[in-house]
Length: 330
Image (cartoon, rainbow, N blue to C red; front, top):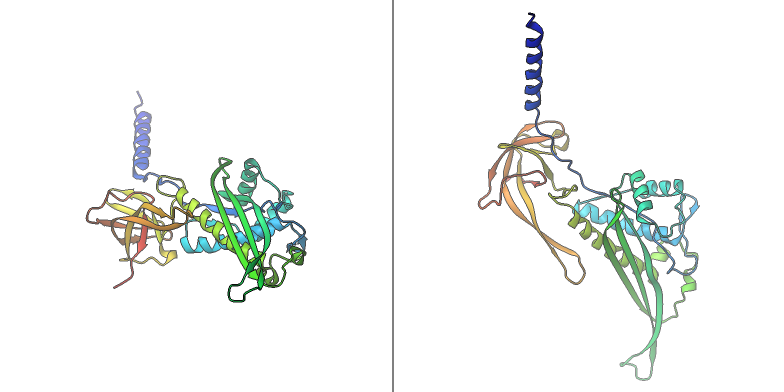
């Protein structure tokens, strides 16, 4: 009986099994969400205030979205918990999908556009208030003389849509005001103005719009931050992220291309609690638990690894999703 073939077969199986055991378990995907801002519904804006981009005519809703995108870019740079799709790319896709005119976009459509853009989240919404109210007030220091007061109010309502699940995962509201006294202000004076001009930004409605966009961006940033974390698909991005843990070895998603060097030291921290303003919903502070300190021993192009010395009273072992903050040299 020829026993050579079975022996070779068994040996091949053992080698394959050994190779499989030698491979580390795949770490969960570590990423932060990408956000795109769709044109807002602009029914509350009377008249043609205008918005021009790439030699095409856009509605006021696109101008509002542009202002919000600018504020979101600032929030993204500040907190590093999400990325924002560039406006040029967004307008290009909207034109291709024949959605440049704006209007209400249902979650299913938002999900489709988001996938084309490579966005995990889409911010849609509308302008629910955009007006100037006038009244007269008495001036106590000039008896018998009144002054005309003009009060501009702008409100943006936003909805965050998950492009994979085609469902709404968060809401936000931004309100801005501006008050002036004296000469009469007519809304018709702003007709035809471009949202991107300094003339509009310096107007009452322009300043109120910028404040509303800023407030909404802060709320949306806080909502996104609530979505990310070790238990979610989207993980908070710090100086580095723990992407793999095996025994005493911890691997980070930063390597030689990011300037990591041997003997660099990272503090491993775990998000514990967010502190929000109960009145505005604004994220005020994030509390972290100290897990330990990692000293880099091995470096590759995209990753680095080392062992972690546990911190006193650490709540647990390092795990995927923990934040790794590079410590300055002393």
